[in-house]
Amino acid sequence: MSQPKVTISIPTFNSALFIEKCLHAITQQTYKNIEINIVDGGSTDETLLLAKEFHVQSVLTCRDSLLASRYEGVKQSEGEYILLLDSDQILEKDTIERAVGEMKKKQVDMLVLEEKVYNPNTFIDKLFEADRRLVHEIRDYSPFTGVVLPRFYRRKILLEAMNSIPKSVIKSVGGQDHSIIYYEVWQKTQKVALINNAVFHIEPSSYWVLLKKFYRWGMTSNKAHNPRYDELLQRKERFRTGLFKKGLFKESIASIFLLFLKGVPYKFGYFRAKLSTKQHA
Image 1 (cartoon, rainbow, N blue to C red):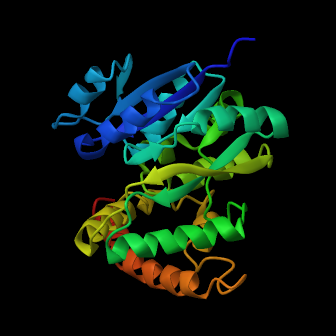
Image 2: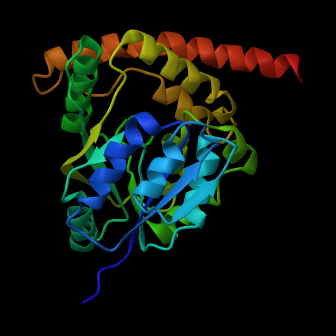
């Protein structure tokens, strides 16, 4: 029996620092019927050269938002399943094999891939690692209150869901891309499951890197506050559900502290973008 094709779609922009590890892990997968498409936002570093070295056949260009790049990657995909991956994520060797098997076995339409922090050596890394343990232990799958977000989807359902996103949101939104995608898929199906030990995520290892990342995330989240998504995003910006449950005291303290560290640059970026929008209105 032939294996269904899986498309791994990766948006990039000056991602040379991480993309090699990401692509190498894909080439090592035990599951072989995989296509990779990269949607690049105009990189000026060695991102595209590295993609060529790994024989990536489909390299697309999208200079709009991160959400627009996701949409373009989905539209151009050929797989029955799609994995929305980031350039700073590293798959375990059997992740795709297990994901396809789980989709068939449980007859679900999307999968959350449990993440761990790649080489958690710094204080910031360890905060992210503790936060990951909390959210994966609680497993709140609600798009409103949870923070575990699926990345592995049936293509047909994912494309239908993304076609429901207003074009103005697709064109302009970066930071809230996965939340919006999951919200739209959730309106069509709530068949979701999780596979353990699936992905390593290279998180910001210092506060300066974290500050820049979440400031940019806030800047590109401003236009996500479309009436269609206002309730979703307002509820998303609260504390994690499940704090201090199941004996997760240290993880809860770390999660709260991390929320404040991320929240300050995020809110600054968000309100700066909002002010800029008003000035140009």
